[in-house]
Image (cartoon, rainbow, N blue to C red; front, side):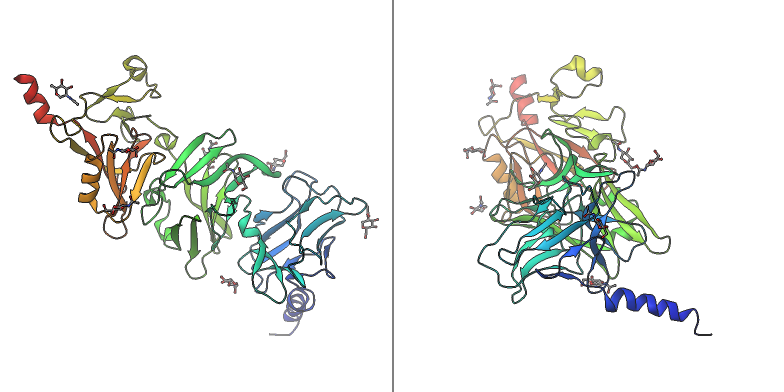
Length: 436
Ligand SMILES: *[C@@H]1O[C@H](CO)[C@@H](O)[C@H](O)[C@H]1NC(C)=O
Ligand SMILES: *[C@@H]1O[C@H](CO)[C@@H](O)[C@H](O)[C@H]1NC(C)=O
Ligand SMILES: *[C@@H]1O[C@H](CO)[C@@H](O)[C@H](O)[C@H]1NC(C)=O
Ligand SMILES: *[C@@H]1O[C@H](CO)[C@@H](O)[C@H](O)[C@H]1NC(C)=O
Ligand SMILES: *[C@@H]1O[C@H](CO)[C@@H](O)[C@H](O)[C@H]1NC(C)=O
Ligand SMILES: *[C@@H]1O[C@H](CO)[C@@H](O)[C@H](O)[C@H]1NC(C)=O
Ligand SMILES: *[C@@H]1O[C@H](CO)[C@@H](O)[C@H](O)[C@H]1NC(C)=O
Ligand SMILES: *[C@@H]1O[C@H](CO)[C@@H](O)[C@H](O)[C@H]1NC(C)=O
């Protein structure tokens, strides 16, 4: 071994990490023209990037240690930099960040200001990929990029609404691969009823429902649909719901690299970085079959992608519009046949639907202190209740969800899912009373 090939490598190393790499902006040290911030351990970089097939430029954060440029956050997604000479600076007086171009006093992008509160403000790019504004002398964060996601979720980021501040931490797709401005689709947690993961269109309608959290994952993001179960083991997910804040987050195991992305074609994807092949592997994609598109078979029906036709009414229900149902137009759904007893004509029964993705929980309620028997009793007590299920599978089946409106957007899996109990009229007693 001679020293020749090693020497330039060392030189390169020193150039990148020792002499020039900084991770922090200060009022006297803005980021200008082509410079980048590099996080302490070299995982993330922040600077100007140019998407393919455009001359527009943006301030973004990307993986510094991954050869395929992977932008995970964009500051000025609505206002591109038309000119290379842009400066990102932090204001001493109010700790606000500004992206400016020479000769133009109106910033292309700014972060909120915190007047009179912050001696020595700095903005630092952390090894988590979070860009935080804080005071040099304090650890309390004034503003952070993690509260304003673009289209990508990183480990440790909180995803979901902060009901106290009103910040909705959703993932909004890029317009196209060349244009990071907000596109048509957003992956979000909808807090109404029992909170659910959804893909919303810009019109407000849903195109996919990941459903409520079941203790392991979202009911409609079933592990069955992971392409590679080994990669599925490489991250750990949690869901927290409090009156102030509802959020999902995940962390990776070991040195795995895993991201969630809301793609511009309306699919929510999880990728894992495969070092051996130097590429991102797609490990999960939703919506992924006909039963995934909201509201699948409509009300009081089951979607089963492995049957033909895919839609059928729940037992005890009939097509609302037999003509259109027969033609394969499922939009009108199904209606109840025999009326519920509701305690008057004897107690109703429940029919179990196995391997179910839980139906829409917009008009459902959860009670974590009831078990499955208590859940059944609770449902029977109210005539509006059309079904129930366990809310938390991780503890062996605890907690209770009751559906206080019609069952909607119900599908079954080949395996996985969970038991859903659908309320039906008292069958035997009903027949008896007819034959008298
Ligand atoms: C960029 O444009 C070329 C030529 O039109 C096209 O082949 C390529 O797919 C485009 N790349 C992206 C990322 O849009
Ligand atoms: C941008 O920077 C270059 C090099 O520093 C300089 O020559 C040029 O005049 C600047 N352009 C503007 C519009 O300021
Ligand atoms: C860098 O730091 C992050 C956050 O602490 C950690 O998850 C990651 O493993 C570190 N990466 C390297 C290459 O040291
Ligand atoms: C996503 O979050 C942004 C920022 O809070 C908000 O303006 C937007 O309405 C949200 N979009 C959706 C579809 O939830
Ligand atoms: C989105 O992309 C995925 C993966 O490439 C593909 O399977 C799917 O059909 C696309 N969906 C739409 C609506 O174009
Ligand atoms: C109870 O049964 C009677 C007789 O079959 C029927 O007329 C009535 O509608 C039923 N009531 C309810 C609430 O279903
Ligand atoms: C949940 O059920 C328990 C037991 O019946 C009851 O005491 C409690 O009030 C219920 N909680 C809510 C939020 O309804
Ligand atoms: C049944 O539930 C509905 C919806 O949650 C509620 O408005 C109604 O008061 C309940 N009825 C009874 C008798 O508890």
